[in-house]
Structures are given as C-alpha cells and as structure tokens.
Amino acid sequence: MTTLILATRNAHKAEEIQAILGPRHRFLSLRDFVEAPGVMEDQPTFQKNAAKKAGELAKWLQGLPGLDFRVPGDAAFVLADDSGLEVDALKSAPGVHSARFAALDDAGPGSGPATGNSPDGANNSKLLRLLKDVPQEKRSARFRCVLSLVRVKPRQAAISGQLFEGVCEGRILFEAQGQGGFGYDPLFLPLGHAHSFAELGAETKNQISHRAKALAMLKSHLDRLPA
Image 1: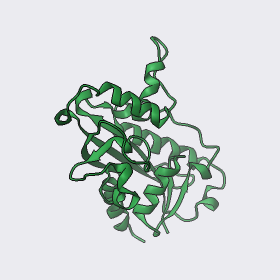
Image 2: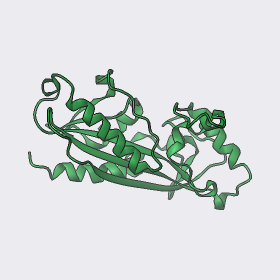
Image 3: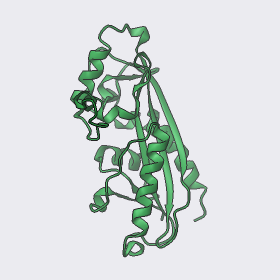
C-alpha cells in the first residue's frame, strides 16, 4: 500500500484529499509528525511553493530515525499543495497570498511578508470590500491548485518531485452564500452552477474543484506505478 504523507495540518484539506484519492492509499499528515518544522511559503508561484514544501518535508523525513518503521516499504511519498484564488479584477490577487490576504494589511513598510494565515472571515471581508464597485460581468475568478509529489526513501536522496495542476473557473458573489466548505468557498460560484462551493456540499465539490482536478491527474499517475 502506498503511503502518502500530506504536508498539511489543515483537517479540511486532508479530508478532501483522502476522499478523492480513496482507500487504496495509507494517509499520514503533519498531525502525525508534530515535530516537523514549518516551511516558509515565500515563493512567487503556486508551483514553486508546492515544490518547496514537498522537498523540504521529504528531506526532513529522510533524516528522521525510525522512519522505515513508521512508514514501512519503499512506496512512500510526500504530497504538498499550494492553492488559492485568482481574481481577474484584482490582477490575479490574492493568488499565493490567499490564506493570509487580510494579514497583508497589517504588514507595514520594512516588516517583511506576512507569514501567518488570516481568519477566513477577514479574508472574505477584504475581498468583498475590494470588489464592492465591480459589476457581475467583471467578477471572473478561478481557484488554482498545484500538487507536488516527492518520493521518500529512508537514508536516500529524495527523487525530484512531479507537479499536477488543476483549475476551477467561476466568479465572485456579492455576498457569502452557504455555511459549508472553508476559505473563500462561500463567495465562489463555479462556472455552470447556481450555488457557491459552500452550498454544493463535499460530494459535488470533490468532483469539480481545482483540487479535485489536480488530484485526478495525481491518482492516474499513482495508479500506473508498479505495485
């Protein structure tokens, strides 16, 4: 059985990944490696952030005593993702800053980049404020997800990672709709649907989302690996 070590402590994200990839794999996350160091997400693109997170975690894991007992066998991979919202009217912002969008307002001159995530409500409020005068036809946006997969072998060098990318097109609503999901889900209306991500429910979202599309490509890749 392939072991996937998810480079996240976000329970919602881990649940989505497990639901889409299914029971064929064994899943661990950073909750199972509480001593794992944090990784600064300071890269300019989703691709580079995902690759950095996967690579640094894989390197740390390979130096961990007893990893081969905690993760038996050779088929162990780190899976990291970076994802976020791109709004055309904001020149693709918040982009790689999606999770800490509101915190950017607190970073004064010379203070460096914001590193802590902002509450979902604060991020959503800022997005609505910036788009308050933007008409419906100009509120186009998309969620983008990039996955990085790096194979981990104890006491060996990590193999270069592979990237898988998914995009879900839509637009930003004028007010939040729905109580489900997380992040910007209540404000995002996916193309071809009449309900926000927060209203559609996990089953539907896991079929059409940006993460679902990236994971579908990843699943196809994993299914082709030798047993």
